[in-house]
Amino acid sequence: MISIRTVIAGTAMLGAAAPTQAYWEYGHQTIAQIAEANVTPRTRAAIHRLLARSALLDTPSCPARTFEDASVWADCVKPLKGADGKRRFDYAYNWHFQNVDVCAPFSLMPACKDGDCVSAQIDRDVGILKNRRSTPKQRVEALVFLIHFVGDLHQPLHAGDRADKGGNEVAARYGIYAPKRFNLHSIWDGPLAERAITSGPSLVRRFPAAERRRIATGTVTDWSREAWEVSRRYVYASAAGGDACAAPIKSTTLDDATIARLVPIARLEVERGGLRLAKLLDAALG
Image (cartoon, rainbow, N blue to C red; front, side, top):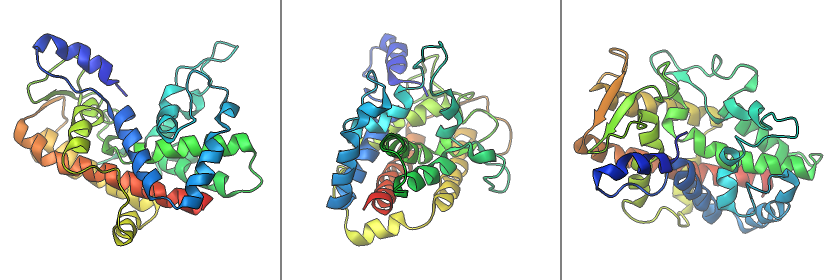
């Protein structure tokens, strides 16, 4: 993912206010905050006990003592190297996404071979947290991965793809902004996510029980299909001018009217991510 720091650098020359956060920070942290507000007190206490032992991860430059820190830990550790000079967490690179073709019938099998995708890892992490034989380190690592991966699954371009690396290969203009490093993926990571989260009442609140049940119903596979459908119906369709699969997309412009239509979609994905993360945490720790 592209940090918003890159976007800010690219837009500074325009003399206009640039977004101040990116999905991989602001979006993940907001999803974590929603989950924390909606888990049971017992689950919340169990989470805090585990995060108090986050030193077991041996990643001092990437702390995970708070829910918000834990939500971005999996991105923070990507460049960390071991004594052998190799990246310590390279094995987890593919766990952040599942590039399911939006122009073919939905199937997780090609993207999740050998469990090497985000939805399979979410299930795996829940299993580790439920297993009383898991070591403390295994449980802490499963927790911080889970908090992050549920957020990833609800960023539609981590769930759907057009053989373009989740929109990373589609040059994009966002309203008046057109920095060289903007692409379709970074727009959904950054400025669109920020606008969605900050539009309307705060998403960080205790939701009514009926609403929690309605939004959090289903399985990880159901949520994968739903996020894939959002990617096809809204992300790629808006980028392609209506038909997501009419022709390959090399570049696109999201004008103000398109952005306004997409804001509620992006906002709902953050809400879904937070409440579904709460459900999984309650199931694993409550």
